[in-house]
Image (cartoon, rainbow, N blue to C red; front, side, top):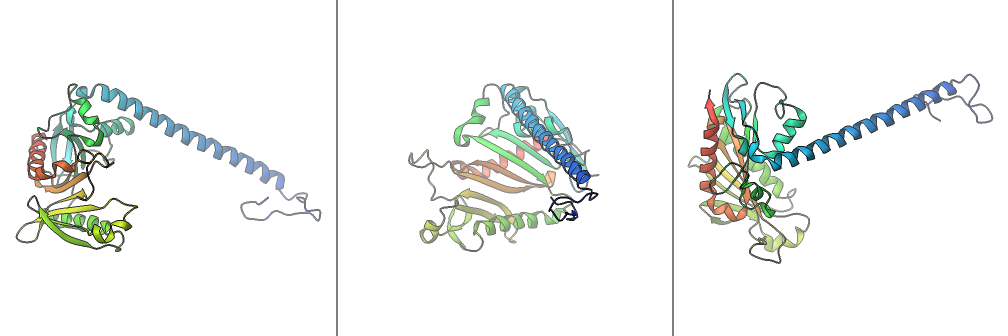
Length: 296
């Protein structure tokens, strides 16, 4: 037996010596062990309760998605004191966000309270309608279907003139990560859809990418070299199961751009088959966000 300080007196027979305090320490150890077990049980039970609540909320919300209430939030622009009011119709609110806010309270995902700096929105291409009882099943389509997942993250305290630099930093970080620790170099590929393009030379490195799915980057800079938009997509070499039944992939894209009215970076996720519509996707997303803005 070892006490916390590692000192337990033993008799010559190898048994705890009389008066060593072993009995008291043994009792302490048992009590601490019992409390530890109870804490683990309590933690596991809490996790189970939260999981069940999430599943129940998801089920209830999905069955009445068109009845999700509108959300009125204060959105932080330059500082927490510089706020704009947004009204997000219930049909656009992300089910995951609604469930987490139900479980974790009205402060989620901005525990500082009083304002928010992140939004998650769901809609369908090409008309960007709200979720209704009639179209709710389309949000569950395998491979994503026509689903657009829109995330809006405010540039906390970032000056206006730094927005494009932050977008460039994000682009470079994702690009570097795609080079898999420097083992593969991104190289220019043929431009497409009016965008410059980079990717990994699969003819050279394809057999060494068994543990990852390669991606291509599409991007556009202004005449001054400032990043305007970039899109990260499953590499073109990966076939879509809709075009090739032998493929198990539903290639996706994530499009990133700045939205000045909310001083934010926007990410739109969609199926790669809609990449050719990237301009319209951005324009309609901006129009949708603008419709949420009520007042400043």
